[in-house]
Image (spheres, one colour):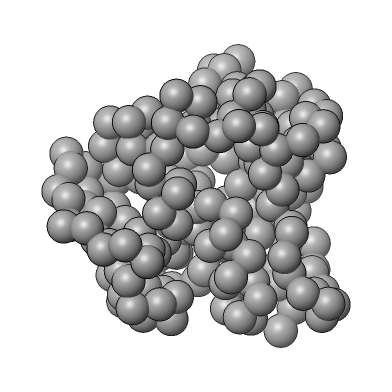
Amino acid sequence: MAQVIAHVTMSLDGYMAGPDVDVTRPMGRGGERLHQWIFDEASEVDAAAVRRQFALTGAVLLGRRTFDVGVGVWGDTPYPVPCFVLTHHPAPDRSERSGTFTFVHTGLFAALDLAVAVAGERAVTLMGADVVQQVLRAGLLDEIHLQVAPVLMGGGRRLFEHLGTDHIALEQLAVEPSPHVTHLRYRVVK
């Protein structure tokens, strides 16, 4: 069965996007700094992390807000696989060059079931703070692949908000430093 993985870059102070996220600034003010590591080809550690994540991903589950602000930048699906958009406002499915967007309005569990079924032996990659938080609260997240960028954003969209009061234990699986980010991998202890 497919693993469910949150693959996210965040600032040292916990923000995965800067303030004022909208379609003209999908990463918010200053947020594009968080993803510079993906596009800088100088680090083989970073390039290997990108290749590993693309090879691992069999389906994507993302929130409607992430879709709305990201689709124009991506010009395609964020990964070349089927993508499921969790939404309260259904829309017609979209076929893109590398995959599809299917809009699921029947809830988190239905959307995750669809993504897991399509991913097969590969992983479901989560995108968007709200989706990551919902899946983590539901106890359905298997791993967190986190890139910590050496920047303090001071504001924006936090990754680990709204998790409730329950303690969530993590087991460290790997730490890989690069000149641009520190790659961390954790298993969620269930």
